[in-house]
Amino acid sequence: MGKPMQVAMNRASSWKETLLSLLEDLPPTLCPYISSISIDGTSATTLIIDSTTGEPLCKPFLYNESCPDALPFVTSLAPENHTVCAGSSTLSKLVSWWNSHNSDKGNAILMHQSDWLLWLLHGKLGVSDYNNALKVGYDPETESYPSWLVSQPFSYLLPTVKPPGTPIESIKEDMRKQFGFPKDCVVCTGTTDSIAAFLAAGATLPGKAVTSLGSTLAIKLLSTSRIEDSRFGVYSHRLDDKWLVGGASNTGGAVLRQIFTDDQLELLSQQINPLVASTLDYYPLPAYGERFPIADPNMQPRLHPRPENDVHYLHGILESIARIEAKAFGLLKELGATEVEEVYTAGGGAKNEAWRKIRERVLGIPVRRAEHTEAAYGAALLALKGACQ
Ligand code: ADP
Image (cartoon, rainbow, N blue to C red):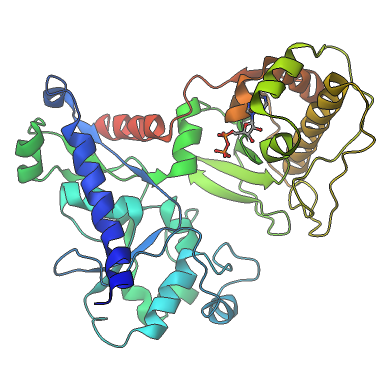
């Protein structure tokens, strides 16, 4: 094995070491009370595992790695505009691996990052959840893999899929003893990072949404109906009997950071009167191109005219981003999702109180700061769900 390959393979061992050191850090007085464990992982981070040893057969495919070599075949296989029709989808990664490997295929199985880390704790290979499995082509509505996928020669690699937060197995005896967990401690299926972060915010009813104001503006809305529209990059994850509808605009904090420092943002925002509408109308983008709620890859940023007063300028920008957020919720409703009733906010922009009030006025619904935003908190809620089953 060459050095670059070794480094890449070590990535999986570093995930394993990190998991074990996190468990090591748990206060020993708490360990006897841990009755259930779940883990979230990065969506579309994919491992091809040897089912006889549980060890990776090749370097892990990271979430953003693209396999353009597999895309023509994947698009010919899947229905038009299906979630798997992207070079970085889990299915494209699987097809790319399948086409480039001739040996060691018989015992291979596919696992997502969190599936594999959970396996280290429960020891049953080939189990996943329907949030992670969406990008390999699993249909969470029919709770099965579609026939166009099952008919492929590589379909034996696909994992068994359960709802997130389902108990898989008791924790392995060696792990249980090493960390002092109780005898009835169970390990449950996980989910993806961004879904875990949504769960952390505590939005549990249809019509509740979480807007993440980070570098971009990402929206997730709990809906009774499933909607998909690849033009806008809108798709739905299943959450029990509801759908988590999502879309992301390129506007957001990255534009603010191009113009102001975080300290300036804080100082200027304190001087904004959020109850008064700004007359400035922008479309703030960090570069050209927008996907949601307007699908236009050539869209130009609009940040002029710039008034002399920076408080007015920032007010105009924040208000314009709030209008894009309102348009985004409007589009989701048009596409058939449940109408938004309340928004929780996560990300770097969540601490901006003036912006919260501007958004409340523009959206016309309550906007709150999410109490918990850590994905790990959402994974813990899934473990709780598993413990109650
Ligand atoms: P990400 O994880 O997507 O990189 P974060 O959630 O860490 O982003 O948030 C960082 C963003 O928050 C930055 O782009 C920055 O412009 C924005 N930000 C920081 N402070 C403020 C503030 N007071 N008001 C509005 N936005 C802010």
